[in-house]
Image (cartoon, rainbow, N blue to C red):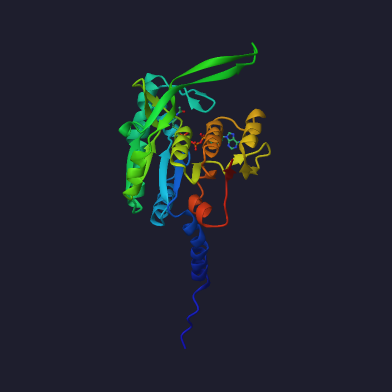
Amino acid sequence: MTDHTPHASLLAKAETLVEALPYMQLHEGTTFVIKYGGHAMGDPEAARDFAEDVVLMKAVGINPVVVHGGGPQIGAMLKRLGVESRFVDGLRVTDAETARIAEMVLAGSINKEIVGWIDQAGGRAVGISGRDANFVTAEKVGRSTPDKLQGIERHVDLGFVGEPVAVDRRIIDTLSDAGVIPVIAPIAHGADGQTYNINADTMAGAIAAALGAKRFFLLTDVPGVLDKNKELVTDLNPAGVAALRADGTISGGMIPKLETCVMAVEQGVEAAVILDGRVPHAMLLEIFTKRGAGTLVHA
Ligand SMILES: Nc1ncnc2c1ncn2[C@@H]1O[C@H](COP(=O)(O)OP(=O)(O)O)[C@@H](O)[C@H]1O
Ligand SMILES: CC(=O)N[C@@H](CCC(=O)OP(=O)(O)O)C(=O)O
């Protein structure tokens, strides 16, 4: 007689699929905004996993919208050209030359690379920046930093660094409704006609808020927010973020990341999750299994 009992590993696969079913039903028809950080996209295998996750999300009825960074890649290009990089609170000080190079790397090179990965994974992606159809309007940002010697706040001019002040969602909706996955570079025009370099976390948060996204994922190169003992903080609300900022637990790129998470959840995004993009299929595990990882930020 033939033994029809499936092999244990096949059974485990079937169980994983069944475990995913309620999550598929829960998320069908919703929008997930995914910030894909420059640090997370270094490894080609991780990039392939990322693209497969995005395509699978689309296939089960979620509308993924990808917003990417590329800070390390811009830094490498500037270094090659002999231009120095300087950051204030995680934002790149951007003169005219730096703005030109940032746009070239972000909208020219990285954007098309991500489109290619998604297409190779069987999806259909279209790459745009905030300048396309003028769908994001930016405004110049300033930063004040404390001058400890003189005990005053000093205004720092960051140059052509902008932040989104308006997002016209129609172009994103049109692409998503046509079965396409939008891939967005963090560059936008100001009403003044100037092109601005925008921190990718800030850009993604503004888009997540404008779309009323159900989830806002930020893929980076750390397991999530770490406390002073380097332990993962699994759950944060806006007051918790303010406390971590005040006592200096978060610094550098984590500052705009958490600022944008707070802004997004306060404007109606259900939850923002900071995830380790180096973990294979980090997003699938987060969405479709009980084993959520990373730091969840909620209102
Ligand atoms: N408390 C913290 N927990 C985790 N990471 C932190 C913290 N404070 C600062 N960071 C830094 O934030 C970085 C993530 O931000 P960033 O470099 O902008 O990444 P990405 O390119 O993915 O946006 C981490 O690699 C880490 O160096
Ligand atoms: C103003 C500003 O800082 N812009 C960023 C844009 C890219 C970015 O944010 O990339 P990551 O997400 O990989 O850090 C920059 O020039 O590096």
